[in-house]
Amino acid sequence: MIQISNLTKKFGSHLSLDNVSCTFDKGESVALMGANGAGKTTLIRSILGYYHPDGGEVLINGLNPIQERTKVLQDISFVPQLPPPIKLSTEELIHYISVSANVEKELIRHYANEMKLDISANANKSFFKLSGGMKQKLLIAISLAKKSNIIIYDEPTANLDPKARDDFYRLLKENENEKILLFVTHRLEEVRELVNRQIYMDLGKVVSDEIF
Image 1 (spheres, rainbow, N blue to C red):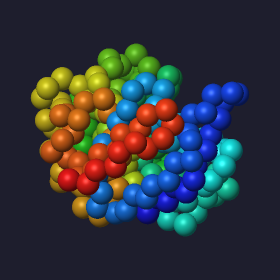
Image 2: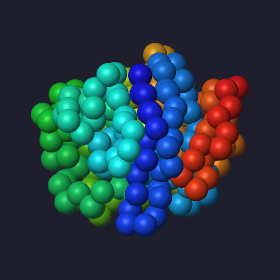
Image 3: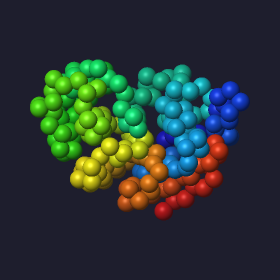
């Protein structure tokens, strides 16, 4: 469970999160929406323990994501909107994830194959030099292979073609039981069949929270 209580975050004089409170439970698939600058990314980064709040708190299964970040992140998969500039080869990245996060290599390859990404043909290529779609497919494969109870996707289909999007939605439906899925998105129609809750943010506040 993710519990956010009276969370406030400032950057200089800018109030990015203004006393935000909400709870996410297992089995919930949530579309987190709002204009640029609404506070969505700050909220996600607070959940991941990137930011120290100026007020309030975040608890992940009762744990503080800053004080116990390593333990908290063991149970979270996160796919950012912009893939990180990783210079490792595809095979080296898979090995690193396997060792550091205790993820089965073959499971990463399985999900990559389901996303129509040929790992063998790209094993020695730098992740940094892969196309945007290929990077996204590999990161999605890793997120599913990790078997986390919390999966966060920031604009997950931005670099995917229509067929890859269909594969992504199918895999999520097969793996959504007893998880918390958070989708940061500007297009509700793309995740409408996957979500059962929509939160809309504006000016650092939750302005609507609708359960379908």
